[in-house]
Length: 316
Image 1 (cartoon, helix red, strand yellow):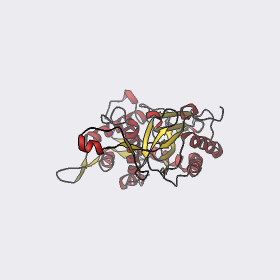
Image 2 (image 1 turned 90 degrees about the vertical axis):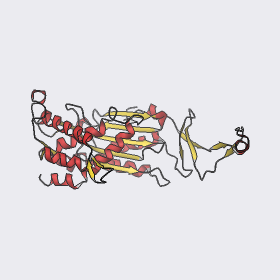
Image 3 (image 1 turned 180 degrees about the vertical axis):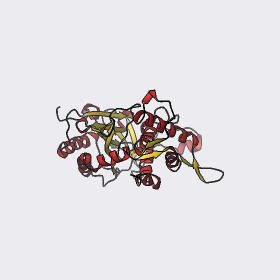
Image 4 (image 1 turned 120 degrees about the vertical axis):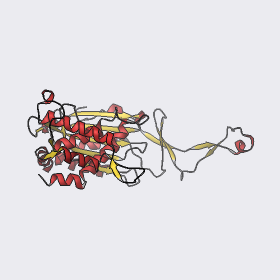
């Protein structure tokens, strides 16, 4: 349908709760052999949550968890975006469903609001929304100005408008979509001016090292119990910082690597968000990249609220 921004076919399923049971272990306690009998588990402990169509179990949840379906929520989001007045011309969307519907991620890019922040470095406003039935993600959304093209195709933003709601009995999807509408309205506001300020605020390599040492790359030494730098992570962040500087402010591949000693708040942020978004190749074995990404994004948000980041902004 014309009014659909996201892929409704991927969301065309419902979930339902069901009571939990366990094997009766009385016989096992005396004979060591499991019986075939089942005993009910009190709803106070929890209930199961499964897809109605496939009966695939997605999670164990509280009996008080409100009924929450993806498709009605997404339809409300789509209406909020239309009502916000944001230009939806040539909008680009993706609908990613993970683990048989246990987790959902939506993205929407708005090319009509693309902006050149300097020297042809273009950003595109983008929306990211996540939700889940397995408790991994609360219902949350982020809106910001994101780069459309760069040397390593980073996904980066200037200022995240963050919306967050837990799946409790007070979950209010309408309130969430109203907040989303306000976030979309933000696109043409102060965020763009801030991004341009970041682009033109110099940051030396020493300042970048200090920033990452005290934020993203900080760890506690097990011997001294002091805060120290994770040298591997710090080295990786600084390599990206150097690459960003030569591609954005230098001569790209025509400039020798690691010869530029000054970047900007923009390239420092790009280094941080490269680390947060490129998870498939860096996540630990057994970890799911989509979940690692969420954790890292939260760490980047904390970096933006740190005294070290604030001190860089004072120089603007």
